[in-house]
Length: 285
Image (cartoon, rainbow, N blue to C red):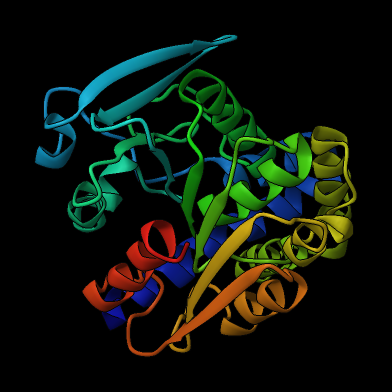
């Protein structure tokens, strides 16, 4: 991010935070809704249906009805072995472009979805429990035995298996995923400089919305009881999600292998890493 962009972003976020803080004294309910909205509404990642990325245009598109939502999926058809790809925050299924070429070598059927409020899927709110509901709908439809998630998509995969206990899943790959929800939330509050009153109201809103204490929303806690095979990769130079969070997940997940990389950043796009994931998925047995 260039210096001018950094300054503009700083001014924008602090101005939003100041406005929410002032509202917190006069209209606390409105302030809470606004703080929650900025925390859960992606500002990037949507796709234009008339300008679909090439990698997605090569797949079979299908829209899956789920309650009031429409979940957009993309399938690269292959054999009976199915893999589900789960992207992260402010992204969409096209983020897997480089990796799909590797997965195609196996002959597997590859399925990717657009998360809530991203890509071509419906919705205005992105959060892990809602995303896990999307994932469950797609799991029930396609029955993949392997799942791969990046960033918040990785955290969603962990929460999904902890919550739904899908017996069909055999292997899970987690890339650059956060572990502790409170770290994400505190970073958000710090970015906007939210005061204590608004912060407490926001935490209460999240607890009511998710039916879980934010302090207990922990990836390392969720994986501690998982017995499926896992592969976790995290980069030492990740500036979005701390490297230590990946290590904590790996330490708590007894049946998982940890891959430490350097110089790849948060995206973790790298052919050598893809080769190791390929080996885990198709050759480790």
